[in-house]
Length: 348
Image (cartoon, rainbow, N blue to C red; front, top):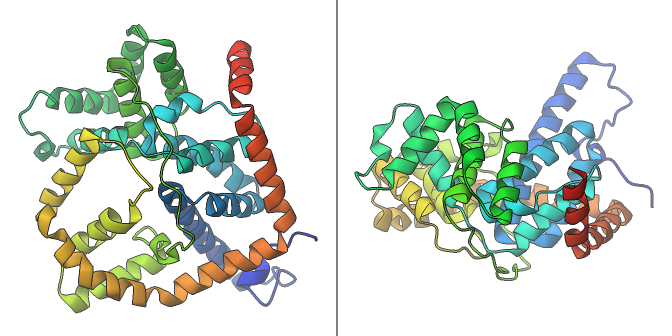
């Protein structure tokens, strides 16, 4: 079956009229909204360990063109260090798209380890002048060091290179260096935090996570990074007379950040504790805010959720051969990843 472009499911007037300037602008906006929704969906699926959804969303993003394939390569590195930083040892890609998908599949199947994210976010806040991230413990030294790395990255990476490390630690650091200039400032901070953790301590062993349930809540893709999510959260915060930052954070904490298992991560816990304090919401009372708000959020995003699910389902039906081919390529790559990595390291 011939692959069907995603735009067919989004617009009825098709692409014959793109010479119309107003239509071209509308299609650009529609594509931008589509990318944001599917990019958000991809990371939520990785966190929750939904391998089938990761494969379908990846195949769809690949079909959108070179811009999205390049985004995918960069985002794979960032997601790895964010969601399971010890798997930064396995970020060895070739030029094929499926090699990046394989990295995300390994993360999806694994328990998550988010110390690099916690430390990176705290350090980034400190680098912006927020001293409330400090708690007068010995661990403040790490926050200050990574914050300093944000301000003086060249000195930091030179210092990292001087540290005595094991083979696995060096592999992770080398991969962090490859991605050190990618993403937004807080993404770079997470990558620096991962390198710091690798250089100053042992890499935790990562085990397989819990199998994903068959039913995925598509509404979680519409967080405050999407147009639809921002609108819904703003309206609900107003109607329920609650703080918008509190609603956005509880959405993320209870749903957006939900995983299929995670190892103890002191830096992630410390970051979450700090963020609760920052928005003036006691952590042990957060569920009291989120429980009634969740009902409203699910209802407000019901139409968008159904549309996204149906859109993805119809696209998959029309592109089954593409999805199955990607699935086979990914599994073959994973089955031979040790051999591939050895060859790659010899090459570099």
